[in-house]
Image (tube, rainbow, N blue to C red; front, side, top):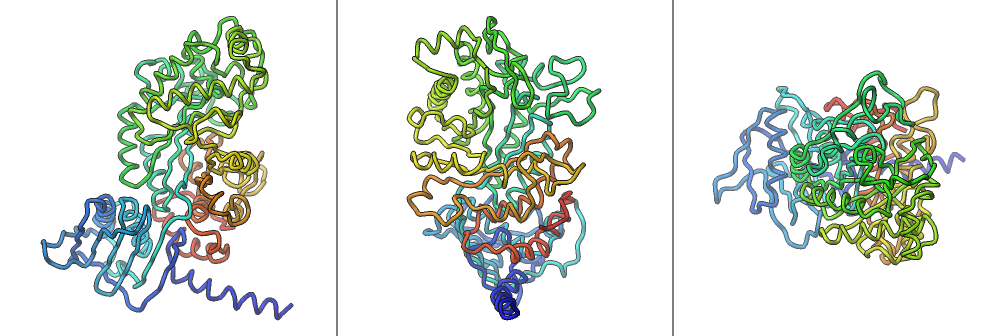
Amino acid sequence: MKETILLLLLVLTPTLLTAQNNPILPKPLSYESHTGAFTLTDKITYSSNTPLANNALHYLLHQLERNAHYTLKQAPKGMPAQLTYLYRSGLDGETYTLEVKPHNILINASSTSGFFYGTISLMQLMDANIWGQEKVIHPKSLWSIKSCYVTDAPYYKWRGMMLDSARNFFSKAYVKKFIDRMAQHKLNVFHWHLTDDEGWRIEIKKYPLLTEIGAQRGPGTKLPFSLYPTMRGPKEKVQKGFYTQEDIKEIVAYAEKRSVHILPEIDIPAHAKAAVISYPELLQDPNDRSNYISVQKVSNNTIDPGLKSSYIFLEDVIEEVVTLFPYKYIHLGGDEVPKGAWKGSPSVKKLMQKEHLKNSNEVQAYFFSKMDKILKKHHRNLIGWQEIQRNHNQLRDETIIMAWRGDGKGIKSIKHKKNVIFAPAQFLYFDQQYVKEKGALGHTWAGPTNTKEVYSYQPLHTPISSQVKQYVKGIHAVLWSEHALNENIADYLVWPRALALSEVAWSSPNTRVWLEFQKRMTQYALPRLEVQNINYYSKTH
């Protein structure tokens, strides 16, 4: 037994020592620690030979000006600079190299995101105060950067996280903070859940009642506050809020500067109570006698696929959404259509007879084939929860299935050569409790899920072949907001689990070691969160 423990210590000790020397999270492909250090002062200059580095440079210069009161200047043309950004062909996609020497720093990349991630790693090598959110004068002695050489590239191209602004509304300022913190850890897809039973949060100019009626609930409104499970909070007050189109344009531009794509979600045909109460004459057959209730105990919350007006409404919505979000994907939900929905709908009955549809699953498959054609017309691709995959032949090859009930459905889709993003609830639903305790924040239906369990997640459980990997688009975490009544609670539920997510999504599974990650997280990553006043769950397991 003693020999086994000794052997384990001999194996782990170099790894743990590396953790002490390597502050970068997620873990890069390689990190070489060298002797010496670069001292950053207000006298150094910078240079760049490509506009692709502009976003990264602006980000760094802003943080230095705010937290060190350094206003760095660009080196005169033809003169050497101490901080240099160089375009280098052959560094594909998000790949970058970072070299820190006692007298200069060099970042090489060939893309906007490559330069940005190289800069994020550079900032993680600096004192945690570089991430400060308020203007504070810090001692010049803080800005010393250990010499090193870093080469890096992500394991998955898609590294996402969802924020649910429908159940409980979050301010524009918080959404920006959420995106910024994602970018600081090389997460690159912000999935924005904008509509649900509890609220419609995106301005659609052609249908103003969506926000006049559907964006508020509580006393005096058409939407009761206490929709289950959104039953926490001050029920005597009206809960409201939505994002104007100008808000959204501002947030999209903010995210783009941080190499973050925004994936909007319009959740249909179920989870649509807010839309249905706003425009019932367009979205539900008046003669529908269906009697059903959703998993969340919401009745009458589903758009009717048999009505022509439903598709006119939805295409109008999509037409405005695509003008706001340049990303090539739109998420259309598709989850949890209640059992019994459409059963008493004359329009659906007529549709089934005309299209020879046998059951509600085939009705839903028909609905999404129609929606997919609408998206194609507007040069967008479909993403949906795993329930959209009712028929493997009706959706375009570009469609992505988001597997949330475990890996099984994702594996099945991959066998049919369909693209999959893995977002299993038992590992990556951050609305779950960390530990199962009475009164603890979060749900328990898929959890509890602590940071170590998030870190242990690996799609398909074993390293995958290149033939399979081409269909595994990435990893995705989810924060439903039933329990997230305010920003502090939302942060608490997300962090530090999102630190584990970033490394699972970015770093090769062959290089990940929990004890090493835990040490890096505790020593370096958590102090960076503290400087930003992030209310995180303090236990690191």
